[in-house]
Image (cartoon, rainbow, N blue to C red; front, side, top):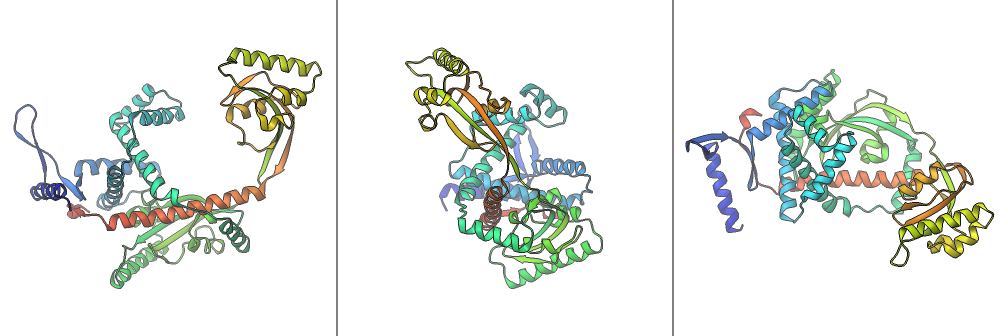
Length: 438
């Protein structure tokens, strides 16, 4: 261990032995008690005040979910574990060069405000009227962005999905008869530490068994998850939302087709611990129909030789010639700067929604059959486009393959993230200083 870290750790231990973090009062010079330490996380601390703020925030969220909150000491333990995980990830990110600058942060907050149909000033007023300090909100968002970037680098970017996995997934779903089904499930995890001893495994098994017994006697699943689960969604009552079976661990997806709404599973053992799932609802998937468009266009790109005004003028002239009877195909071949489509008379072929850039697709969606647009701009330059036809297509097979690929990636990401977080925790120095309040 480097000397600086030894010194830092010694300072923390000295502070904790006093039970407080202290500072000089800015005005009187008296020694003022500011805060206690809830936990040491490597060379960082979680303060009691900071922890209690998070506990109160979670209690408000639980009330909004119309779920009864567990006793405050139980909730405090759950929130503290979440805060420890957050601190570990932020430390890892900081030590490996991941950061979010103010420009990126401001852009994200502006997007959040826009999604709520507000400008920044209105958004800030709403936050502060709800008792949320805007500066603290900014830093919370920054932390979330940093953690997202960290997980993208350490977990998501390392996930590979092969065509063989996709084929195997689809075949398995068809055998199980659940390929077009969706499940709304809730989940409780009693986690096992890395390299757990047989004694620890047995202790956790008994703990999970006791929880299962209480659930089958009528204990509320959401309350139990909030108070007892080690899962990522524990503080949301263990609610995993609607998932296709492919989005879930194979251990879960094998059970779900045999379960009925309201059923609670037996204990499910995995390397991460003991799981209990509840099937809240099930619904059948629907046929996936898309509206495809057949269109053709002419593109002119402004350059050092062609101004935007000239590009627009040329396109208007070409449009008028087409309306007067000239061939769209011939004019596209001789004038369009999209050389790929120009060689085919400007044709873009049949395209699914989302294939074209948004500006282009928005114009095509407004056109009637055989209508030619006025000149418009996209990221590629200036266009005119003609809609030739529309058709409804059952895209279920292609959609199923794309969904399968996404489900496999999501499942692998979730499993690998859980493993990575457990490893991060097992390698860290964590000391909880408020055991008497948990």
